[in-house]
Length: 132
Length: 120
Image (cartoon, rainbow over all chains, first blue to last red; front, side, top):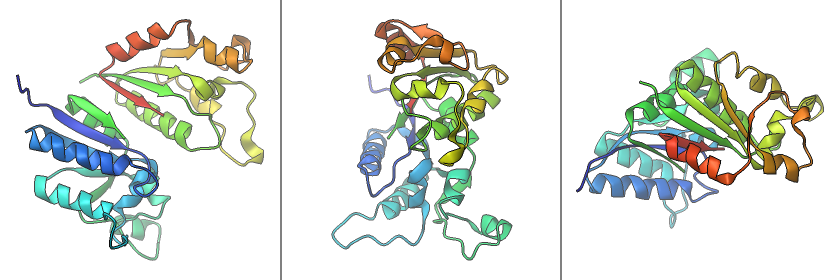
């Protein structure tokens, strides 16, 4: 009856101007609680902004980037940020900072920068890909 | 492994990054030899319009990327006729010749056949 599935999540909107990230976090937590697994969370377009390690949330609001980091740490989930979408929005790791001689690097520790091939790979290796 | 990936493009080529994001993904998935199906629907049909010139906006012309679909062996391209009609567009104005979808049930069956559906 209770067949375990492997999910991947695909998120495009920004964490602050849409409900997408909250819904995706709720979905991920519920899926994990029901013994399903999350193969990867792929951040595309404005969703890549939540890989910035310097976001500050108002005290009475959820810090969404931090929630992703927590979830990734607790369940060892692969958080992949689309590299081309991220770097044009100023989200850089140390390698990209050096490559483009940028002033700083700010990629959150649990996130990695990679290509769209990682989304294709997630589609190949998951039973379901859920878009937010 | 090959998966059936259905892309539903409902956004105009300019005015938002959605269409461009979708095309980037389609070309990547094609490079990974996936079974790709693309449906142009709603304002997404404007992507197929010939003689586009977004140089004054300025933006990159997306139609050359659409024309490249064939080179990437992306052959399953569909366009909803009703979306063309609603926008006073005709088949002759399109840069490629997609399969015209006459009934919405055809989209249903494409969704049904797909392993993954992504909408942009």
